Image 1 (spheres, rainbow, N blue to C red):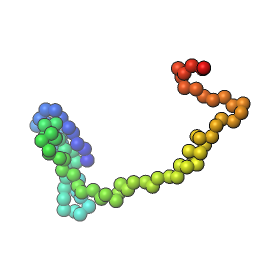
Image 2: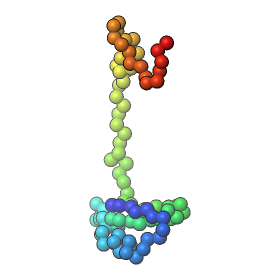
Image 3: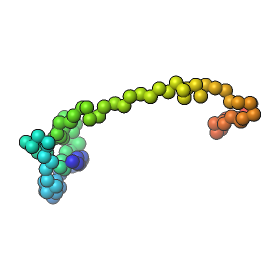
Image 4: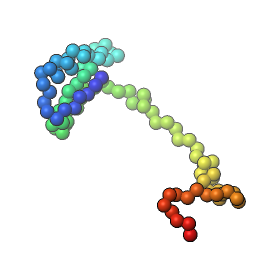
Length: 94
């Protein structure tokens, strides 16, 4: 599916091209949605939304957070003796 957002109202050839792209049939076998939909900025600002099939919220679950305590410990350790530390560019040695 595609959404074409335009500043000006769509021309007849644009509408014709969108219709010839066909329709997406939802898994329930009943609902159909245009594969290419054209909507103007004005329509968006007036609150119009594209005609989209319902989405399954479980399809986009948030990943679990990894334990980063080990990485934090590495950052907190001072540099070993004899090793040079990297300085940020532009920082003068004092």
